[in-house]
Amino acid sequence: MSSTRTEKDSLGSMQVPADALYGAQTARAIENFRISGQPLPRPLLYALVLIKKQAALVNADLELLDQERAAAIVTAADEILNGKHDRHFPVDIYQTGSGTSSNMNVNEVIARRAGQILGAKSKKPIHPNDEVNLGQSSNDAFPSAIHVACAQQLQERLLPALQPLEKLLAAKSAEFARIIKIGRTHLQDATPLTFGQVFSGYARQIQLAQERLATESSGLYELPLGGTAVGTGINTHAEFAQRTIGRISKQTRLPFREANNHFEAQAARDALVAVSGSLKSCAVSLTKVANDIRLLGSGPRCGYGELQLPAVQPGSSIMPGKVNPVMAESLIQVCARVIGNDSCITLCGLGGYFELNTMMPLMAAAMLESIDLLTNATTLFGDRCLTGLQADRKRCTELMEQSLSLVTSLAPAIGYDRAAELAKQALHEGKTIRELLLAERILPAEELDRLLDPEQMI
Image (cartoon, rainbow, N blue to C red; front, side, top):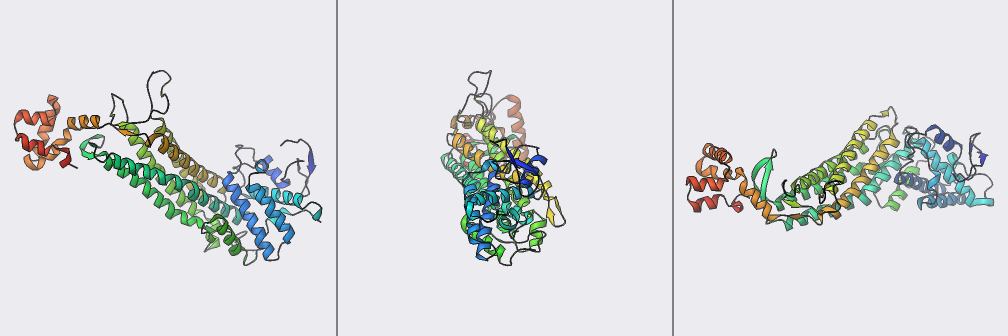
């Protein structure tokens, strides 16, 4: 805080900085939860503020809140949504498991700022509980905000980032369609295929990742709002939830709806666990793609060397000229974090005891971090690795000709056992399959060329 002066808050004896927009409950939370120095993720904060804004408008329409005071609450909320008061939300992620500390932080900041906006017009201070939190509880407002924030980040950031990645992989599949390379299974040589086929598999993985995320994220559109304390809707108007959620849906352009069952919606966070599982699946797919590209680009002379990765930065502090696959490694590390976050989110999902889950702030932070990391990492990987990726046709041909697995195409003509013997003999004598067969005159040259033609194997 910029000021060290303090004043007594009207809600209690707790001293707070004179320029703070929050009040006593927030001050206590700040004092109690000096743990990580990580405040609520901004997408979650703004989702919670959005709920307060729309709730004020609905409560005014229902004649439960004075129109002028509701307008002041809306103006204060809009200021926060525009990033004007971020410093007044310092409550740590590791706080009350229901998110009550952050909910009251938002209630108090909006109440105080709305009071300032009203100024002399206000006969009494705007109350954070009675007016800003009207018709709500932390137990339904906070999980609703989590759903809104995660759905927005998925739809506005991650899914739009995965789409161009899929297109880049599909474009590489088309570009590499005629480049034949050796396949590998169990890390051993296998039969040939094209690089285009390889990259078509990668593109399909990312396409499926998007489909899984879209399917599972549908659960986020059910909001617990309206259940208040334990799901019964105590102290809220019968029309409050439907009207407020309708406004939230209109502003976000996402199909939010009132939960079918408020007791499930407040006691469990299964929808978040399911979405996290899809994020983990996406991370696994991205790791596969990044690892393959990293390994296929190994070398440049003593590795596979079938791919040529863009040299985005010097890769060694001691070996001159060495260039490492830094973008792939960056993405792989992000994916490891996302997989770890999924374990955290799963454990948080186990924190639903009786009528409330009490691990929601951590759950939300882990989920939003995963979405943010995947969004940024996939974008960079596409821009700085895939875009400039090249296939080395000559190296692919060399490795394919050396492969003993080419003998597979001879099995229909000479039998499996004889083909296996020839593979072992070629390895022992240091010859290619073609060289051995020509020397042994097992098949006519024309027939051998036909059977060993890679075009016939793919």
